[in-house]
Length: 70
Image (tube, rainbow, N blue to C red):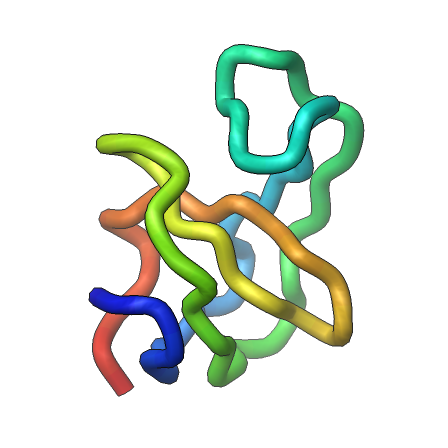
């Protein structure tokens, strides 16, 4: 997926935020598990494992294998 794409996020998907935005090696500072599926905006790739997305007005990292093209 590319920056600007809409994606479908299943419920109970682990979303994480990192200490340094865009750096998955910097340590996790927050997380959430959406109770409902949602459409999200893809901001780009963080690394080979994560996309950065916007969910409910906040930036989160989500494993690439847990989001689907909308």
